[in-house]
Length: 251
Image 1 (cartoon, rainbow, N blue to C red):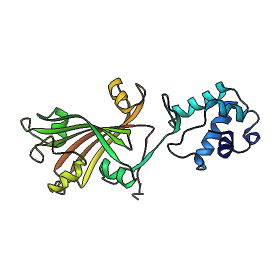
Image 2 (image 1 turned 30 degrees about the vertical axis):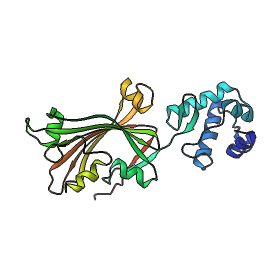
Image 3 (image 1 turned 135 degrees about the vertical axis):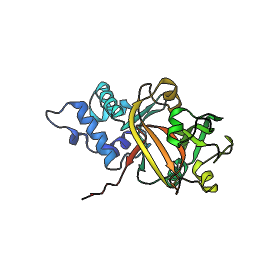
Image 4 (image 1 turned 120 degrees about the vertical axis):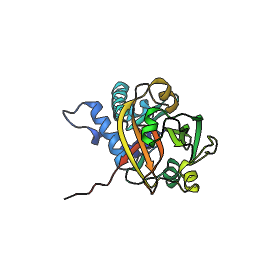
């Protein structure tokens, strides 16, 4: 990236100076301003540290400290051997029941998946309770790593009662589209969200650091009769999503 490009992103370097403010904070604010103003977009690569340091007349240590802060805040993402990028975030409404495939398709992204497990078996206790099943009723499980435009975006473990879908290999794309063909697509869902850290195995699959924070969501989808038809657990990288909800005053 050329010096001219750095100038396009950050303007006059003299305008970045603020008395009494640590230099790394000033660099951090300059990068944040470029993102807010749309000069740096989701997925854009940041100029090399040496170019930023030369242009802003600070040390590379200062640049690195500013970048490290923004990585911790999940504004930036670092990929080994590729550079530092503006984190790509997907805004996903929590008050609309959409499948992963549908959400990404609406954003013009190509979805693919790596299958980690497809199996038929007896439900675990949490699955049995969520799906209101008897202990001897079978379930089908679909565990996969979901990608959007080649980037790992979610780990998803979906469980469906076998009397709705008894073939673990019947799903290739959207689970909801297959359930819709059966007349059993969920029309409402109950979701529980919390921030957790992930183990090394899940971190490697999602291409994030071990013990990195993710958003964990449990969702129980019910049909129009109120009968549970799916129980899904999902792990979403914190630097990839903004989950939003519309809130109404109940008074």
